[in-house]
Amino acid sequence: MNRTLLRQVRYLDPLSGIDQVGDVLMADGRFAAIAPQLPEPEPDSATAIIDGTGKVLLPGLIDLFSHSGEPGHESRETLGELMAGAIAGGFTRVGILPNTVPALDNPGAIRSFLDRACDLPMDLQPHLLPWGALTHKAAGDQMTELAELAEARTWGMAGFADGQPLPNPMLMRRLLEYSQPLDCPIALWPCDRALAGNGVMREGMQAQLAGLPGTPVMAETAALATVIEMVAELGTPIHVIGVSTARSVALLDQARNQGLPITASVPWHHLLFSTADIFFPGEGVGYDPNLRFDPPLGNPADQRALRQGVKDGVIDAIAIHHAPYTYEEKTVAFDDAPAGAIGLPVALAALWQQLVGSGEWSALDLLRPLNLGPAGVLRVEPPRIAVGTAVEAVLFDPGVEWMVAGETLRSTARNTPFLHRALQGKVMQLWKGQRSWRSYA
Image (cartoon, one colour):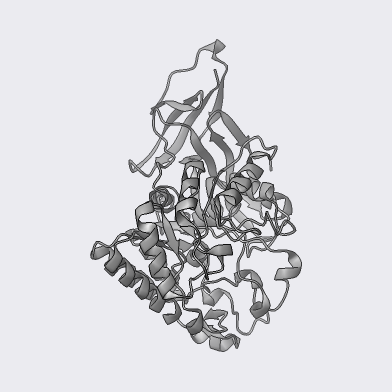
């Protein structure tokens, strides 16, 4: 019998709102007992005992949207590296956007992608949830065979998404009409590229000081208003990707109060950074291309509104948008750099350090949009810390400091603003069923 006993660990379960300290027993891949204090195991039970003092036991984290370098761009990051980074960061389920090469726009491509992951020789893997493309090659021009793609839900397809804005509102309407009877999650990124122009930074004082072209707030909010109107008329439930402005939070709050079936997620880096972090006047530092994102980082007022929107439940989920690039691709001028950064190995530590460690959020405030919220978007049961449920859990030590470097990132990709910086808080061990992973770094 495979048994592990964690003594006096702080355990959290966002579904029940539990945040307590006690003993937790795992046996044969399930939570067997949880109590303030459990009896000593029998000497012949071969139970592994872990001192949980000062550590936190979390249910597995869920990321809705990440980019895989494989297939098509293995020089950026292999699928095995993405999965290793996810496990090291506490993510047991990872949604993969369909813009691979070839794109995940048909059942065969999705089956091939999942088979590729299953063939990797890893002791423990996160559960990958590929999104099926809404349009052919995820190019935004021609609708895919949605009914045919929907059959891949039985294999683990997350739902429908392109991972980029749809340029044609009429096509968007047709997609919402055709997909309604299929009952699959649909994720849309509201952005009007014509209004965004050549902007690389959120429009405002910091963009003017930096001399970088700005992206107006209305590039997001005008497109979001269109999406909301379509949902109001058609009734098709949708998920909004990449919320990045205070005005968008207000629009979503209004839509939710009207009872519209809309959920939303914010990229994790928008909670930690704003335009104030890109430009440092008088210091001669320049601009970090690892802070170039799409949508671009908001102004400080946007950042405050996004944090409050997550706490209030207006924004359901925090998405990682893990996006690997090579050193050569990212080490260029800010406005020439591709948008995106890796995040799966570092997001939990950085979010915990800045939001929970500072006292601004409770631990449950952070865990809900990384576990319960994404599960609701995907329409699946979330991992839990509760007696009788399958083990899918993360042992996190908020007191351990570690250096973000190549070996700790577990990837050839290095494009993160945290590179060569110390973070406090580290995943020490992860369990999924009867398998486990342990950090030795």
